[in-house]
Image (cartoon, rainbow, N blue to C red; front, top):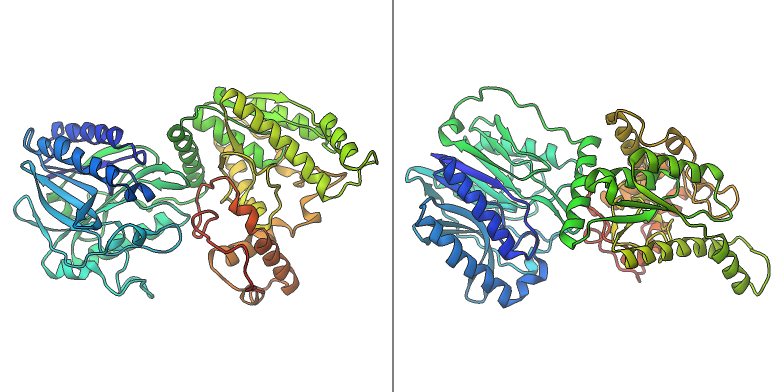
Length: 550
């Protein structure tokens, strides 16, 4: 039996557009000799559809497309389809895998485990289902058909499983020797390594071949990295799909029970992966929101340099505009570094000085007195720049990008309605030290140094007052970032962090800065997710609260 597997990049809610994509890959699979064509989780609505699922008209349209467009295909040309879809029984909605065959829905395989943590809120929409049965594919291949989370609770693999049940136990007790998982599993750092450790464990535990088909592309903050995987029943990797491109690939079921002809090395999950997925996330976010070009403040600093380089690669340098906005406190080298970067990348740039409006505001707000160089005046400069970027965005149709990184956003070292203004925070989940890694990697893979060396080597500074340095207000980033990781991603208390060798007073200061900046993050632009508990949908803390972690 030959199975065609289509790794799709759907657009959420674009039912007709996604349908055409499904039909196109189905025809391609049939022409390639497939006996079954398989698609990803919630392939027509796209994942995650969120509150679109609350509209009966939306669910009705999905059902209509399946009935009128997909079911007839399984009569003529007559090859079955396995596809992820919503499925309604009475007033309950399920996340399902539907097997379409001979013009009918032959069987439904409903999701049992509904994640309720981090960025997931499946119990808001779907009902769990526990009565699961295997499917005899091709008439003689007992198959466990599952949806995403249902493979992520093996009691032997995970020391502290989240759920009380493991759907795989019951399915393999029925004699399954092939596992097919339709997935929409978003990326975070370390996800590749985790998948490529857990899936072969399952294959060897159950002496079963494993097909893991994952969604590709970015939808809002979430980046789906594809990287679909096929393992034989000995846990040997037979195929890994692209992490950045749609594709259809084929599996002959006879090969699933033979030794691998070659050893496929483990996937890299390093700075190269992060860079590729940042490009994918940026490109998809713009395309799916209807934008073709971007604008942002180009400061001559490391963050805006990396944003510029990634944007130029993702959508083409001709669609990227950097705005250089010197103030009375900007250094001469910052402006020249920004110009050099723009020329290296081939992007457009404009220089708009904020000296005059800043001085006018200072005179107005200080009742004609001289500048006092306090925080209010620092933020005033940032907000003037934000106004300029947003003006260009509004008038000329650019998407405004926020250039700040996760370390700054965490401790509130950013200005509401200033450098936080924009439609996407590309680096908002990338710690500062990783921004440096990205800059160095970009230069390594280019034939010449695209990001000027001085941008990477100079001390970071907002340049909002004379001789300002980030370390005047913050710990060094190589100390700050590990504290942020422990507090934000691992949920350590201040005491637990201090026990790992950090000064208690410093830890308390950092946590206090994080906690008192929650109101800023609530108003921040969407952040491309790269870590668990990322800002936005991942980390959900009350602004007004009385509990302290230090």
